[in-house]
Length: 151
Image (cartoon, rainbow, N blue to C red; front, side):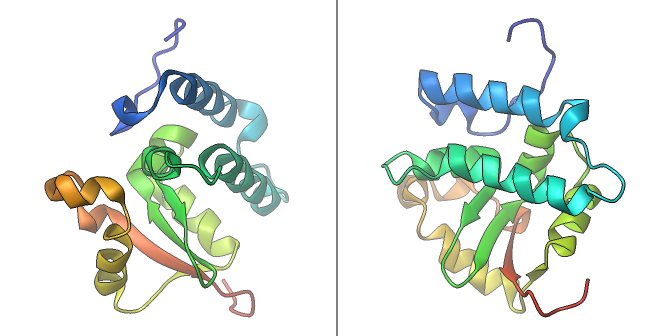
């Protein structure tokens, strides 16, 4: 990996060669000091980070789900996202509580009956149809953007 000792995320092998290269570059960039949350700008910084991940992962092609699962975030309907904090921790070199706090600061809140929502979300991932044991449901949470809620 070009001399770095970054941890590879689960499912990394699903990515094609170019997507792997882009992921590793993004991982290196997003874990650098320039992308770390900064006092008084942390929400803005994290919002830009999410936008960068989305630009990488969502291209409206048949491999979107692979890039999303490796990054640990899916953009869903109704202002919702599915998040696997463990995968995001690997990508961003941040701890789970930092990621959850940043999501909450951006007004993404866990939704009630989360397990049912996670089960519905998982049904949309192509790989689940043939390898249902690969996804641990408890690692995923569904969050909804609620701009009027106070963090």
